[in-house]
Length: 125
Image 1: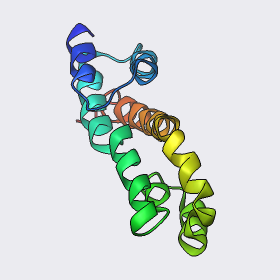
Image 2: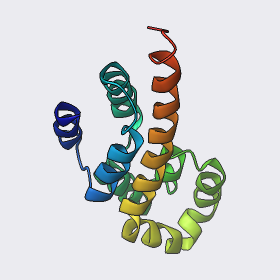
Image 3: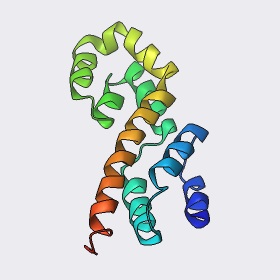
Image 4: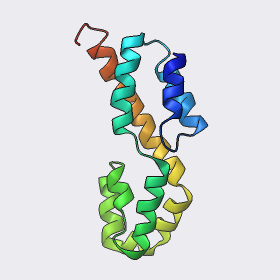
């Protein structure tokens, strides 16, 4: 686990909350499953700075891109049609960009855990 704990630290923009979530998620995985989990998770996760950048683009270009990135299609369409709810929703998302990224990354950790558990644990790979 020590090697993967250090590998998690190389993920761009990782927060202590996300690191704690990843440590909990991978606690009962064997080494092969942890490798597979890291490979899957690192491809799915979103960097909080990227979420912030796309949220800021909503002020000058198209509002709601950050919501499409995180799978909130309904909110993305709403922001797109209302100009980020007249920029109020976009301002809120600028303030909360880390929590938006953390929520999305927790979902991806959950998905990655189940994929790794089924793939390697069941003798799949």
